[in-house]
Length: 406
Image 1 (tube, rainbow, N blue to C red):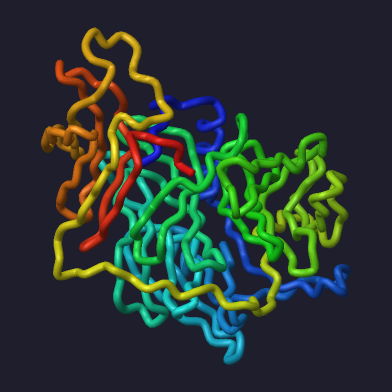
Image 2: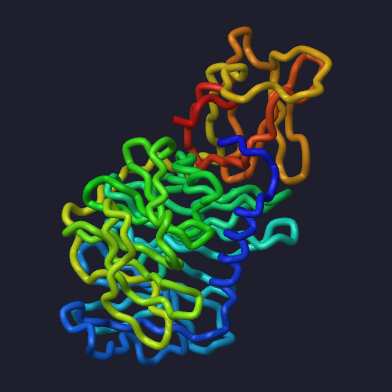
């Protein structure tokens, strides 16, 4: 777990408001196909039988286009698929809640975000489903808005997570395996530039994303916690989405000023110059996807999840090994000797650490938990942590409480 002070900064508030606006905007949207070599030509409507379509995502082989759609404006968003070879549209989900942000895994399944409630607060969980609608599986269990998943070439899923219960915390990029195991911090963005849109991976090893202040940023995949770059600093206007191109540069949705619409532009990140206009219309153009196969195919990772095992194992090497100082105001020991484990309903257990500060515990799977390190007087030395969970048969380990996430 990544321990983050329980506060809502103005930047986090901006991210949350933007996410709310993106989800609740009543205006209809449509997927439109443009020819980049003929930018003056009007785009063609991709899906003609749905009221609204948005959030396009292409399979790695460019055979299928996934998107969120509505038959009627009052309907919840559902996940759909367009077979680009057969020009056939099929509905994948049929659920009572909004289902958004689909992304295709290389094994043919689809990960998406689904609305839910925790203690009266709206959250978004990530789920996985086969393209024929079978095998619906929940992947995340933390009380957060988990949105904008994308698949990295190494096989893991990158997404934006904003914890909202019992208080709102700042948004960050998280990464996990496609079975929901091993979720961990990927990047917290930069100073006042928290992630607000999903990351997009380039062929030269960068992850590009949009911040809550509609700025463009990137990190290196090799060291995402320590390589943040603010790419649009000094560039006027706003960015709505980004799609790296194999030939270099990025296809971005951008507007030079608030009085203009978002258009499609080309941006060269190493020049720090204003984007070059490609296509602009009277309506906003966002979420560009270049229709081309990905080479190589993202890896298919094996899974250790066993539905027959309702527990998981969690180990920590030393609860006093931490980059965080002890809480101010404690009157007892500054070293912790035990941990308190809590659920949504309150304290679950207090576990004594071994003499070397380690613990090794078995817990029920798929139940959100958070931890506090306590001294011998029962005072909280560090924590509470973010909410974590284990999938059935998952084993997780950490070096401390909390050591450097890298």
